[in-house]
Image 1 (cartoon, rainbow, N blue to C red):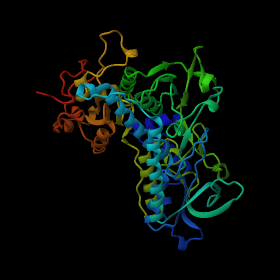
Image 2 (tube, rainbow, N blue to C red; image 1 turned 60 degrees about the horizontal axis):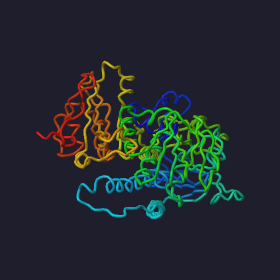
Image 3 (cartoon, helix red, strand yellow; image 1 turned 90 degrees about the horizontal axis):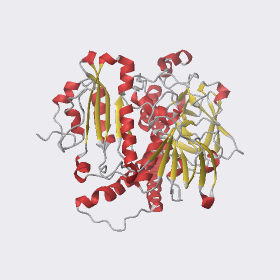
Image 4 (cartoon, one colour; image 1 turned 135 degrees about the vertical axis):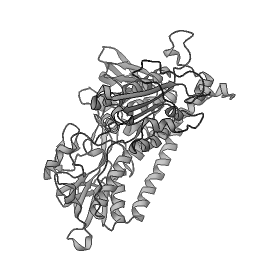
Length: 546
């Protein structure tokens, strides 16, 4: 992100993705893409061919079939640089959201045992973690999901082919069964959707990086115990992987070029980083690998740009993702591509510059790299093509969550983006910093590496709640930000409030559930402009005790 980061950057913004309106000169208007095509009235093998079996591709294929279209879906997973492959379902279920959340859960479980359980009366002797068992559990669940997706396609009357597909012309798709390049077959289609997603990018200018490092494509099925790990990058993927590995008990270092979570609210990003440091994650700021080489005992020797060298058991790159368009042969049709990101340029209707070829999900430029976004865009596209719908995907106020040890959820504008878009004088920021009730009761301790002295033992306040409001619209809330436990669950409901144009007064009049972290949003009184301390006093979590 430019890949990994840009997906969440767009999820932050309250306006449609930049560049969309300018692209419409080179792509058909939405009206031209609403004609209904049924296979018995066309000279094509299929009404709709989808290339890519991730969330967006599958959702669009099933939605099209539900409206009478004859649909074929291709999916083929190119092995990672380490040879890792997986089943149908795309990045999210196989090497993204699902395994990441499960490992995050496993890490949180360990943190509760190690940091809090004794104070709550538990005795945990000989506590240890089995990496192999965790991987086995995660992969077993993923395989069950792979199977359910195939069953779902079959029951939806979508034909599925495990084959590597490419474009021959605007209505013809060539494919190779199971990637066997010796046998080419072709089919024709009225409409074609490209939903091939993105893959991690390892920089080519770091000697040994491609040969000796792994990516998020590999970590969730890796049989070898990670051990001492270096994470290169500061995107949400980098911090999430660093977080769960640290919580599982591994020694983790993160090499950061400049700032963490670029594009997110900077105050929230720094709070996430600060908590990770207090839990023992080491951040190397402004220092990156210059060369990777084989060290002793299968370790990786990393030479950094500051001249230092250190040995690691695992080096994981999370420095960006690029569109998976290799071997699609987009150049045959002169389909417009953003070459810096390897992503397909589309208009607001997900249409490329070729009127019957579309792209949704991570492979489309300036679109949030989030599975629910791909699903929604794919379904909306299918309804336009086969149900005569006029609906266009709305990319505003898309919620997102980062599953770091202390989580972060956001929807709408960051504080910085709001100032930039609306002017500093027109933005009011309400905020509060406080301690989660359950964590504060046990005085959770910092890692010894983060302690300044023998008295500096308690972790800093764990939670931050922030509403970014537009003064000119009666303090309409245009940005929601929450750092704390269960951020995804908290943020999902709040996103609806933002879509319905809730004002700060609506939050004020809502009664909170006590004692919760989320109720803090019903009690925000201190503004950034006031200069007053926004640190809460008392031990009732996000609420008032009296």
